[in-house]
Image (tube, rainbow, N blue to C red; front, side):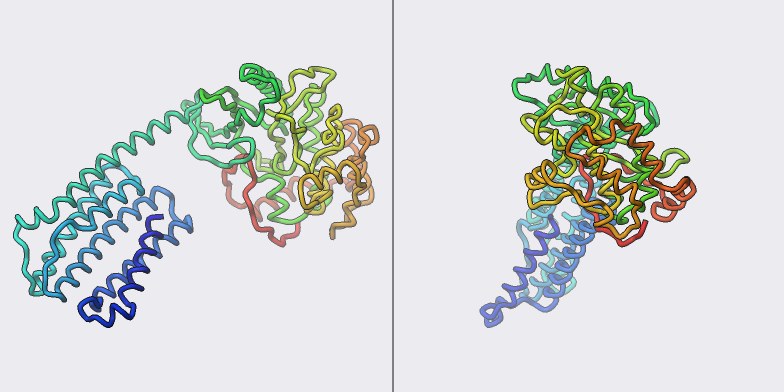
Length: 499
């Protein structure tokens, strides 16, 4: 931001000093050497701006570049002023713009107090250096007393910069302490979505990183619920989720409520990518691999349904495909912290989101859209939408607005995936996906266990092996990057890679 503002200011300065009225008056014309110095400052400012935008350096190193940029501007500015003074044969004394530069950088380009003070002192000294250059060019060199009187403001600004850096560092430390949740310390924000944020966190005593999801309370409070009721419901659901033991369900380590009232739960940090990103980046997934991945989702949902939990928001962004130990293409189902219980088991414990039925429009079952009773077959419908996404790279229904998609899910009959995919999709898998997408829940597979068995029957035995999975990951994801579950999938450019 600082480099952009300075670049714009220098551009305006160059335009004005090279305008016709100025050039017509020799007394106002910009000397040649000064033009070169201003051009150098302009090019450097543009370079710093694009370096910052490129994210080529870490934030810490980029702030160090900012301090070097501050010194460079002060040096070039001081030399330019003295060149200009030498051409006019008059010294330039008085309060310098360098003092302003020092203060601006201290406030907007934070760093440790020691580094800020060092850069500020070097920058403040550029004016006396400029005076010496002016003297070498035959000008009148000011006395020490004159220099002190002229440039004390520079060193005063350096002192203020030190105080400012100390205050900002203290505030940053306080913010860091405020980012501690239980035994975990938030270290990096990984994603932000409509429900809240996901942070990378480190346990203060164990060498185990984790992902923490912060849920804004205003996104969960239903009509008539107070904060205490909401917290009790969240605790019950978090405890129920933590009891799930399927290896394909995200592990929940802890949960709680922040002093500000935000709900949070701590989960394992995964190395992989969600199905949304998987398809957007690598294209539709071949049927054998799709069935292999979907079967693992079924394992997770089968246990949840048997314990009376309905996920209600199965979608690509909530299904993570990852390396897990020595295994590849290992699936984890996320966001069980927002599930609801089947009404026949515990109707009063479902977390709701105001008057919204919950879920994502492109993956919602008709009964969910219409506010009817939900059970495990609601998730089966969403699994059909998920299978459609994997096989075709698109949603079952698309519309100009979310409402259009909801209406189509409630009323229209979908095309088979094979009609919208270049992949050779077996007829049995085509029919199974359409069965999951039946409007009437009674016509869908009755449970996730039955669906898994039918998935196994739809593809040849050994259609997607562990060796093939490892080979894919070695080719496309050769380095292990800790990519945790995100609140919202980042935008990526689709790549024409067949999988």
